[in-house]
Structure formats: structure tokens, C-alpha cells
Image 1 (cartoon, helix red, strand yellow):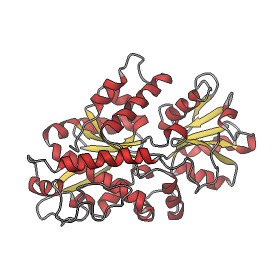
Image 2: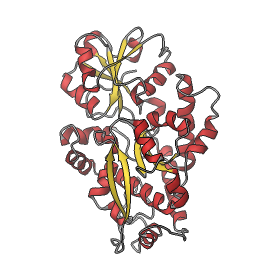
Image 3: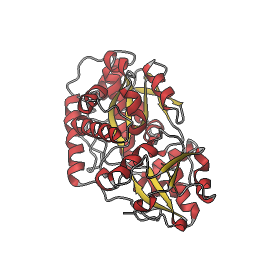
Image 4: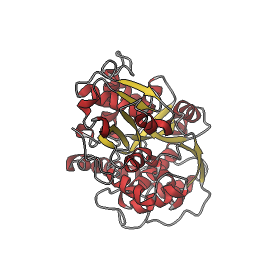
Length: 381
């Protein structure tokens, strides 16, 4: 069933209270457990210890009740010692990574004892993951459905948290009668590459709605900015990609493009799409640093949810596409209040892996529960 095609409306209902409660319980448990950390190593160790063990401010003092990130550094005093330098790989054009520049520009990284340098890898996932695995970067933020296949192949990168949900959209050409998922049978869908998160997710989504993603539709590759042009020329009937572009394309089309589904539709309403990946050796050698980085990014994600105006300004300042008004609206249509960790995140990773088997991305023999255990690292307890 198509969702409301008007930009600014939520494409899926808010995540259930049970889902939010699960996330809050995980964060509470890990936040309390972090207070037991004692061995802090590496540059700026004393600073990291002070931040990880909590500040003297009231517990959760300035944190929104909907998303209580426990033992954050937000209400503590700024560190006085040297900051631990880190390199964070990201895609500067993707609004779903806005939690990183928010954490940098609002001082969250510094309050966690970190001096974070950004390395922009665009959409080159293999290069990004290789950079993390080989120490050219220490961590990164990216989309689960682009990262999981390379991680299956053995990159030494561990997932430490989910960041947010939503941002992938499947758009149909209303003028050609493509106003529902069912109408896509026998049609062509434009994508930016054959391993894109949009192609992977909506292949799964179509399969679950009775449309064979191999035989009932054609996935045709175009340069990213040319996706709407493929529809204008009649070469494609729909397109699949991510915000901010998809949001902007809907608005610019003046009703020609309509939203058919998102990665928050139906059962995916509480599913994370963007994740934090940390170099395996950093977790093994300096776990408190990985903890501080993960917690800081989650604080940035929290700010994106509670203050989308701030998130829009920060993202715009890094060259992000879209007016601030549009960016605020698209952030509100996403889910920035549910950042899974622990058992919740491992469950979601295993579900994605099972679904990727369905569309022949994962090997049929992969034990998805074991895979989730292997690629997840608990740095918050």
C-alpha cells in the first residue's frame, strides 16, 4: 500500500512504545554498566575515564525522557587533558550521518575526550570498510544494507550501535499509474548501483509483497543524479534511493513522483538503517575509546531527533543538499529516537541477513544468528 506521497508527512507510524521501551532499557542497562569501567588506556586516558564514568550532574539531567542516553557527557564539565585523536569515515552528502557533525559542532566529541577528524568516502563502501579495517580510519557511519555483505566476507570491523531508522524511499511515476507497489510488476526501477541499500532493501520488500525482484521487475543502473531523469525520459517507472535526494525529488516533481514505501514501512517501523562500525583492533586494544565514540555519536543522533532544526543547520553547514526547512521535515519523517544496541541490534542484524538471503545477497549457508554475534561488539557494558 502506498504511503502519503506528500513530503513532510510521516511515511510510517511512529515506532511502537514497546520498541522504544526496549531501546531505552538497553541504553539504561549499558549506561549503568559503563560506570564500572576501571582500566582506561591510550592518549587522554584520564579524560576518557572521567567522561565514561559519568559526571557529577544529576543522572540524565538534560536528556529527553523519550531517549535517555545514560551517563552522557552532555552535562559534565569539559575535559582538561589532551583529547584522543580519531578518524571517522562518513558520507558527507547523507543526512543519515548528521549525528557525526552534530557531535563535532556541539562539542559532544570533545566532552567525551575525543578529537574527531572526518574522512569523507562518499558511497564507496568497500574503500570505507577497508580504511577502517586497516587503520586508515578508526570508525565509520554507514547503512547496514551496504555494510553487511562486505562484513560477511571478513572485514575486521565491528558494529557497535544502530544510529537511526528511515531515509530510503521507493518513488513511483504517478503519471504512468505507478502509485502502489503492486503496480511495479513488469516495470523498471532506476537505482544508482546494483548493490545500493535502496536496491537491496526494496528487493526484499518487493519479494515480501509477492513480486519477484529478479523476474518481475528490472533494476536499471543510472548515475545518481540522473535517476529522476530516467523517469522523465520514460526509461524507468520508479526509482529507489535515499534522503536527502529522494525527498527533494518528490517535492521538485510537483506530484509526478509519489512515495510507494520506505524502510520504515510496516514491519520495518523500528528497524535501524544506519550503523556505527569500529575498527576491530581499536575495540580490542582501547575499548574505552570505542565506548566514548559510540556514546558520543548516539548523543548526536539523539539531538537530531529532539532538535531537527539544529541538525538541519549543521548538515547544511557541511554542504548537505536541501533547504533547512526541507531537511527539518525529512528528519521528522525518519526515526531518530530508536538507536538499538545489544540483543535488539543483534536481532535486527540477523533479520537483515535472513532477508538478504531471500534476494541472493547472502550465502544460503550463512548462520545469521552466528553472523550477528560475530559482527557486533558490545562496547557499552
